[in-house]
Image 1: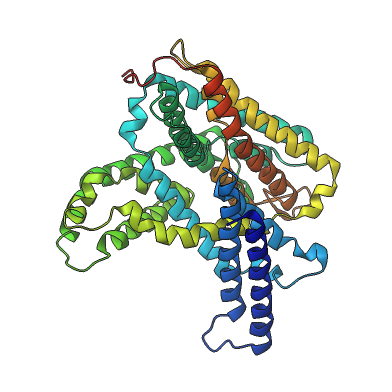
Image 2: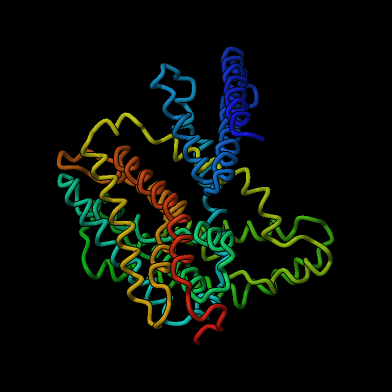
Length: 452
């Protein structure tokens, strides 16, 4: 299918969906307790996400960018006088579906990130991960403090936390497409990306706790921060203990059920339960979802796969294919292009992007081993992708009182737009730069066994 045909298909989809929306609104049928326009809106978001993702995938770019840009188009049709989709921005049903989608996405990321693999790649990944969190965090804080001097310190801290994590999925996809997964550098990159996701989630938990305390009028002390850190560590330790001792017998017992779908239902239920448990520790639900995926092992599914059932990742794919795009399209819908008419905001967006790129490139100097392609390691850590959007989306739901005592979002629409620009640029530049770095300077120790 050519790009021209894709474009025509997009126009046809939008045209048909628009007529459906108009018909649904005119009917006003709410006999089932759900506004029919919500169903049409979800259908339109899914179709737009798939068309956008297909276009970007054909351009050898991550489909998530197409989903995000599809949402930006839908959310800014008001600029041409079309207001039918404005309700998508604030509809609680769509918001709930998007939140479930992002919980399942972090669950998938956790399933792909094994603790043993994180430890296998040695000290280099740990050093790269720690520096890849600390440096971007303070650079983001500094950029925010310079461009947004009227905002509170917690806003600057939160923006710094947006820059911490690396998109494991995007980096892994690039290395796989290049056929470089066997390189020592690739193992360090992926190990560091996973570790700094964990550290980034810990920082997010601390920042969210601090913002919540400040919004409630509670003073934030060092003791309070230490208490939040202790609760975060306690949650992860609890999750690992549950995964080690409680989960295996539960899954073995469930394996005796003869009905199909038990593995998927049990796994998603465990994900949701651990996400709820995270909230009891004052953590974000995505922290619990990530931990749920991290503690589940292949051995837990053996009784199911032995009798011919699909792997859990394969079972999850149809579910996440529907729910995850809703989140990214919704993130795009919330971007107001009118804010980019302010030159100061564009300056903030590009400065934030520069901080994101430079911060991760600096972390390459933390590689403990000699003779490795440090440039490639630094470039592989650049993309923020879905993780940056998730953290920014959480910030958009939190509020802090301003100087007048009025609660305002920690991440307002203008700042969110700047974060979206940063995510798009860091995601787009990584594949060509990483490919060039690996080709220009052949890495040493190809395929060598990792240092333990």
